[in-house]
Amino acid sequence: MSIQNQTYQTIVIGSGLAGLITALECHHTGPVLLVTKTSLGEGSTRYAQGGIAVAKKIGDSIEEHLVDTIAAGAGIVNEENARILVTEADASINILQKYGVIFDSSSEGREAAHSQARVLHAGGDQTGLAITTALTNSCQNLGVTILENTLVTGLKQNNFGGEVYGIETINNENILEHYTAQSIVLATGGLGSLYSRTTNPETITGDGITLAFEVGAQLADLEFVQFHPTAFKKKGSAPFLLSETLRGEGAILRNSLGEAFMQKTHPKADLAPRDIVAREITKEMQRENSSQVWLDCTQIESKNNIELTKRFPNIFKFCKAHNIDIRTQPIPVTPAAHYHMGGVFTDKWGQTTIPNLYAVGEAAMTGVHGANRLASNSLLEAAVFGIRTAEHINTQKNIPLASSSEALEIKSLGKTSTDLKVLQQLLWSTAGIERDAISMTKGLKTIESGQAIEKLSSKKAINMYRATLTSHLILKSALSREESRGAHQRSDFPERDDLNWKRHQVVSYVK
Ligand SMILES: Cc1cc2nc3c(=O)[nH]c(=O)nc-3n(C[C@H](O)[C@H](O)[C@H](O)COP(=O)(O)OP(=O)(O)OC[C@H]3O[C@@H](n4cnc5c(N)ncnc54)[C@H](O)[C@@H]3O)c2cc1C
Image 1 (tube, rainbow, N blue to C red):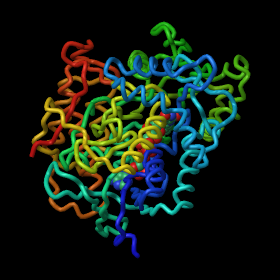
Image 2: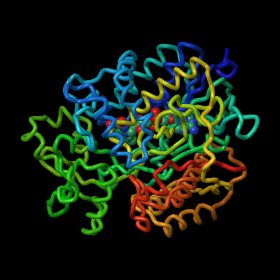
Image 3: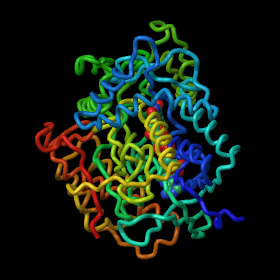
Image 4: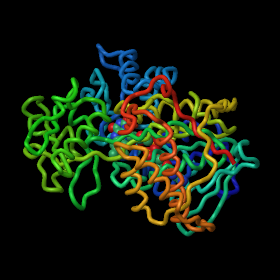
């Protein structure tokens, strides 16, 4: 039987950790189709370096992990879901190991805002690659049906707001097809590549958000985009991520005078929460009128008895290829868009507000990260909630999450920009590390005055349409939240406003 004529129990969209683990865990109860935009396993997961957080070490505890997660989230973490995240961490690691992931036996690393060293890594600084390789092999060996280089362009539904029953796709030859299933899982990742500086691969442009939005699913917290403080900065190089574990092992941020500027800014110095470090770097760059600061790893080996070539083989190799020996030379860095805390609004079983539609991983908003994610909690979220979602699908007890009546209603969709680079620059400059009403209104006007494309007949045009629509939704959400909280920092509303905004911001499409 052809792939197309088969009846599937589940269609999973995306082949990062969230999609792969959901597909594997659903596969034993019914046929699964895994559809992915480019090659199997391409996504942010593959590039994750630092690792996956789990409180296993003697002296650490689930409670401490929970406390750190809630503290990082700036007042709006969903505590029930966060407790699930940290409590089910260990069992999820065991399931990853069952599918062949081999974690390093050396001690756990430490990352920013964690009170304990609790980050499991694999292949040194190639945790994401180790996970992706093991899970893609398992999917292939266990017979999950895989469709690569296929963009999901829409979800099938009879009535707006009603149940979904399938997907529409376009492949590299611009051939359109459709597939049906009882359950559809969005595992499409975040949206970093809507920004001109990002650590994410180029396929990650927030598709799941608009796919869900178009069928009437509620979204939430789209304004919370995390900027990673330390991406490699050199002309001609993509902003390669320099993992926080470098700072966890003792690397220090310095300005051009060699001053360790984080030490005078925050009690946790270089290990302060990400949003604070990213903003301080930006301020330091503005003060010095420079396009980078420096990450100094030169004291790590002598102080901590660590061999940088062994602990960070990938980072070492990358910097060496750009003529920097991290053992003796500081690394030029700037912040870059990295992670999306917002996404498709889901409950603790991955259910959205639309029957039969689930969302997992970075595409979902479970509320576990609040306004700011704790490092190494996102791979964990993808694993824990991917496994839970599969369990829910396998037992077929679909009762979708109730819609929130207090939603930001969007009545018109953005028009289509024609150039991704222009759109990325626009989002960076209008909804970046610091925003205000003037910049965001300018961003919205630019998008709203764009051209409406009537015939979306190629993969490129559809990608562009989705990228524009997601950017539009981010700007609308960020403009609406009139306060500063976590990763959302407004220079015109610099204070946190718990009276009005200690809550998630739900967004819905009203046709
Ligand atoms: C450089 C880097 C380092 C990181 N390091 C860490 C770390 O150490 N620890 C940690 O916890 N987190 C880390 N993160 C974050 C973490 O990797 C991600 O949040 C997580 O991997 C997301 O997994 P996912 O499965 O949800 O999405 P992804 O892994 O991004 O996968 C999304 C998938 O969806 C597919 N897709 C998207 N749209 C469509 C469409 N329309 N049709 C078909 N397919 C589609 C993509 O091609 C891709 O396969 C890092 C992120 C980056 C970028």
